[in-house]
Structure formats: C-alpha cells, structure tokens
Length: 326
Image (cartoon, rainbow, N blue to C red; front, side):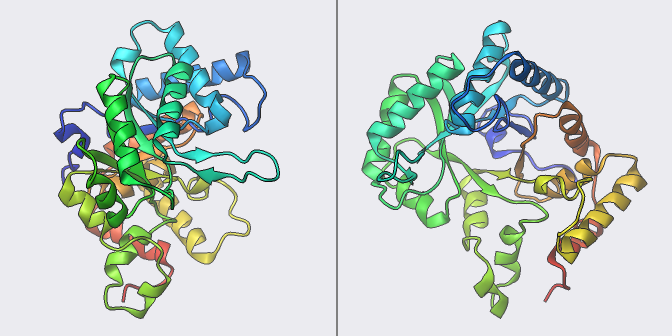
C-alpha cells in the first residue's frame, strides 16, 4: 500500500512525512541560559533531521522555558539559507504559574496569542512562523478573540498558517466558526501506547467506549476537513525501542517484543517499526519525533522504507490493546 499523501502537501506545503519535535533542545526547563553544549546538541539534531529528509520542525513557546526556540534560532543564525529550506511550527496558549496566587493556566486571549507569537519570532530570529498552533484547550476561550489575534498575525505577515493541538471536533468547529483562515493542523497524542484514536472507532456500540478518553469523531472529522493530523509522543518514551521495561504493563512488554521481532526480520531499528505503524494508517498522520539524539532521528526515519502489511499492523494493534478485538 502506498503511503498516504499528507494534507499539508495537498495544500501546497512541501512538508516532510516526519517532523522533528524540538522540546528537548536548549537544556532543562529552567531559567538558566544555554551554552556551547546545548548549541552542539541542537546542531547535531538538525543535521540528522536534514540528512534524513526531515524539513518540518515543531516547537512551542514554553519548551525549555523558551530555550528550545532560542537555541534553534541560533542554528538558523549560523546557517544562512537554512530558513528557506525548512518549515517552522510553534505553539502558544500555555502559561506558567507566577507565585502562589497565579497558577499555571491556558490563555487564548487575543493579547496573549499575539504577544506569544511575537516572542517566538524574536527567539527564533525569523520574520514569519509557518504554522502557529493553540497548544491546549482554554476553557475560557472566545472564538472572536482567537480570530482577532489570528487575523492580525496573518495580516501583518507574522504567521502564515494556523492550527490546534489536543482538540476535539467540536472545539475545532467552534473556533473555525469565527475564523476567515482555515485551521490546518490538529496535533494529538497517538501511537502504539496511546491507541485511543483507534479505540474510539472500534468501540462504537461497546461498553468499553466509556473508558476511552479520545474524543469521538475527531479522527474522521480531521480526515474529511483536510486537517493534518500530527502525532505527539509516538515513541512511547522509548519503551518499545529498547528502554528497560521494568514496571511496564504486560501489553507494553508484549508490544515491545513484537516490535523487536519485526525489526529483526526486516533488518531495521525498532524505532522504524514503531513509526511505520503510524505511517500505515490511511489518515496520513505526521509523527512528531521528540528526540535530540541523532541516532534515534536516523532510526525513526528508516520507517519510510518499511512497509507493514494489514496483518502486521493489526498484530501490533492487538498486542498494544492487550486483548483481542471485540
């Protein structure tokens, strides 16, 4: 089966099949500045991504408390011409706590969206963000405020395209009702240890549907609307590709064994099987690989050369479920 074409590509965006998640760049989640070691790590990760055909880089304003964007911006400054070769996506809407009285919260106010996007532009050292996502749903959202911010950023040439993260069909429809620009991305947690996106469909008319937290109809809606589905956390923190399995449940252990066997049969790293499983889905999911390790980036990219049969795909799915299909 040929790999499905990304909705981003159908919209004329020459995006790679995989994206590199940049959350781990720049050092820890603290106020300390990054140094030569962090710059070297970022350079090695970017090199490995480019060598592997990855041109899509995913950020958020909060990653490393801004250091992930800043160290990436340093890479762009040192490499004239690189900006024109890549797509830069970032997110906004999550705010850290401020003392005892102000908790961590979400903020989709027009003022915060604009201020956050402008902060990202400054840290990245670019004139325009290719895609800006709203990071997590804000219960106090007003669609008109989001529209005000998006239209201003788009009109001023600061953001080209917009999307969301961790949102349901209803939440996307509500926002879109006020927007003149289309929402083109929805980034959700999906992978072999986060199979809710499949269970929500398989469990229609089943009692087990009550335990599933993935929002019903979201996968199908995004497919019909031409919204790019992106998968965050697809690598299961490495538990399916070599990380010690102590304390992991039986289904994760069984899935890891099956991944290892399939990888050995094909002569590829286990990361390639984990990513290939997502790529096999006809929704043209774009996995966001969250690592700064050049070796793991290259291992994940080998998924593009792996073709899983329907039987292979279901074998992994059933192993991940830990029980037969209903």
